[in-house]
Amino acid sequence: SLKRAANEEYRRQIWAIQQQAEELAIKMATCHAAPAWECLQEQLQEVAALEERLTQLKNEEEGRTSTSLFLTQISSDLPVSLNESPVCPESPPPPEPQLGPPPGFDH
Image 1 (spheres, rainbow, N blue to C red):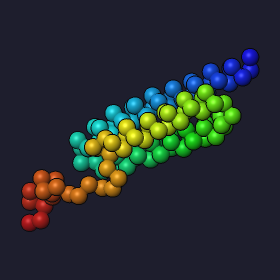
Image 2: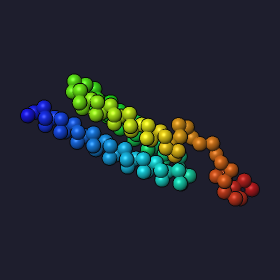
Image 3: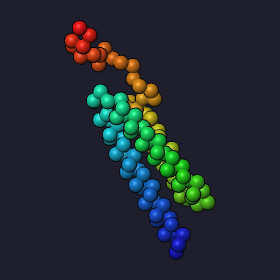
Image 4: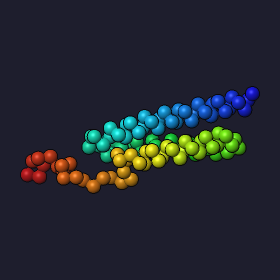
């Protein structure tokens, strides 16, 4: 039926978002290895975009209880797993001594 096809498409989109979220989590984990706060900021923007997409889907699907519950679980899982990651701070990390200017920088 048409409704079932829409449901399949919906689940496909959710799955794609989950995949993107997992890739982002991996990228974010590698970001802090390099002195690249900008890199991390970029990933956080992508996460925000994914969450926005999830919200849109959720609104479109409000009428379907089963998929709404399914989506609620994903959208609550997604930000939590990323926010709990130690390499995903809310604001730029304070500079640590060993990350100071290179030797000879201030001479």
